[in-house]
Length: 124
Image (cartoon, rainbow, N blue to C red; front, side, top):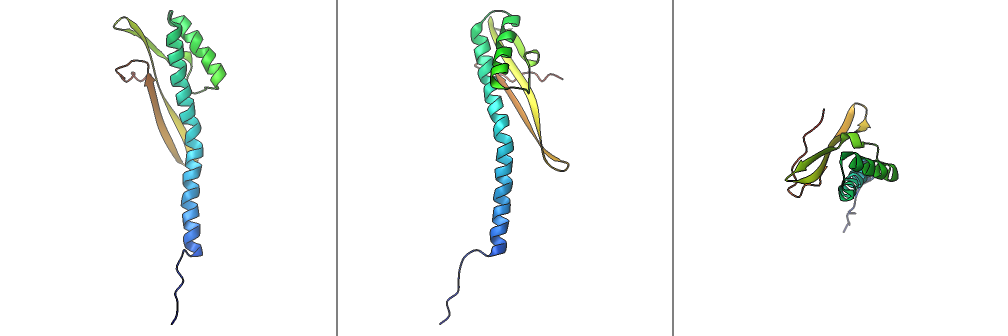
């Protein structure tokens, strides 16, 4: 009576580790951009809470940018408008992450303080 061994071969293990490594590398590149997006969303909420005019909102956002190490957008990229008598702040930007050679990953981030969640108009 012979018993067969079961399990994963060395080639199978290397393939699994390669795929797992790719996804870990991808996550290590995406997570910081998502953290920056969350910081931008928090910064526009804080800027809206300060009230005032466009210049005051931009100054408040700039202070949050400096404290939060945000470099994807600036206060000039914000869309500040009055909607139904209330000031709403929106933003939209793209983040390109180079992967390998000519391959890259494009992430499109957008956000708004509007409760309805209206999408901001993309600025060129």
